Length: 168
Image (tube, rainbow, N blue to C red; front, top):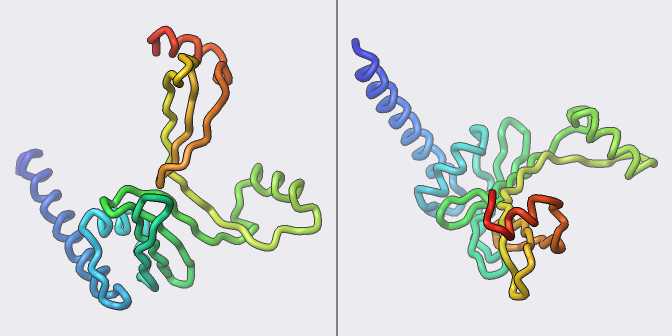
């Protein structure tokens, strides 16, 4: 069997497994809500095989999103996606003993009387550099669903001055 044939067959098998997983995911959706295919793909990719407990369609600012609660053998996870399936964020409860050492040290410093809960989160952000209305270089961290944290001119050091000159 050639490598090309093997890759094609592997792709078909993986595609079939994804469809089976998507069918199971749809069948387990409480309330019978039908999710768009891109959202299902995102849930399969980031949901770690969890079962859907609830789905809510809501607005974050002007952006409609799906907020999905999953349960994976007792581990709870929240995933938020756009209607197009773009990942906004994930949040998964973790034990304080599961935190990386640098996080545990910072948590003990921030909460000297004890940490009561912890979660591992992923928030998708985009770093965008551009010129504001006054021609100053600004950097913005934009997170879905469209909130931005903007830095002052020159806050990024030399990168900001190079960006203003059109260099990367």
